[in-house]
Image (tube, rainbow, N blue to C red; front, side, top):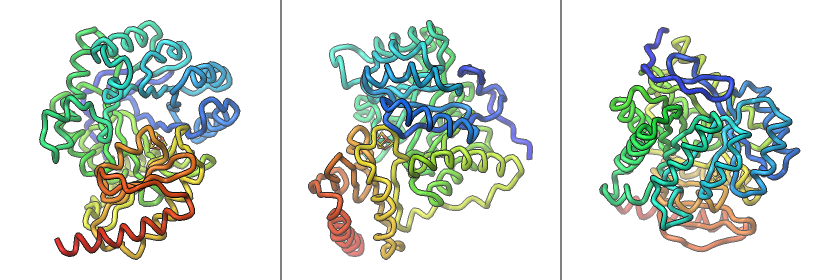
Length: 380
Ligand code: SF4
């Protein structure tokens, strides 16, 4: 099947290029603690062996940044660094990476008196000086608060697009063009909509596609496939990541799943697009990364899925997240949300906090709340 790809410009990420009809690159992200050099090197090597074109590593502290120097020395794949609040770490890590991802919604957390524009100019200058690409990584759960205010509460797409567009404008006003954009949501239908709308206005900017917190395989792969089939078949998408909740030694499955989906699309094996069953029980869980606060998170995600099977015909969304960085925000839109701390699991009903519970009692608490939610929905 020949797919007419969007005429995106070329972006260089270390030894590869994306956009401008270059093959769609497949990425993954490490889930080890970055400061644990041996474990992270082992995972980067495993992902490289699985066929990753780019591996992303989270750097949240000077200690992580220091570890990255050694991780780079011991590995050969193109590395992307994931910055959270501490945008200044870009300067420390840039010489050892090929790409820097920043999240517009996280630029507000430190140096509050400084304008986001100044911070982006800083990141762009660092990227330029070190031949790094950039990714403007917009995420539904952590969208720029100033943009959220401009749209109605039930419009999650408007603020994401507005945020992405203004960052593109700023980067271009700085003559920085070696960048791509991502617009991620845990709902594949929203991923399709937001990326289509972005590409309609800016077909020249390469897009990194992904469904965030897609969850456990096989459901997580199916959700992602739905979005990728719809977008890639329309020529949208230059690099992809499949986010799955799997243990560290199975992270390579993200790459295998990504390659499998791309191959199927290329061979015309596009399944009649599964109309993602938004009516039934929807469990989303984050793919886990170095920020996971308790290894028990993966098992918890699996236990939640098993325990809630009795409610599969009910239209309820449950989100299970691995840490406090993204967990509190990412669970707001779910009917019930769990985010994991080192000792406790925090339980939420929509944006409301219900309390924190030890790992061995959380399932029972969740079931009680799930029964209430089902009853409330039944009564309309
Ligand atoms: S929720 Fe936390 S642990 Fe999970 S992928 Fe996001 S940052 Fe990593």
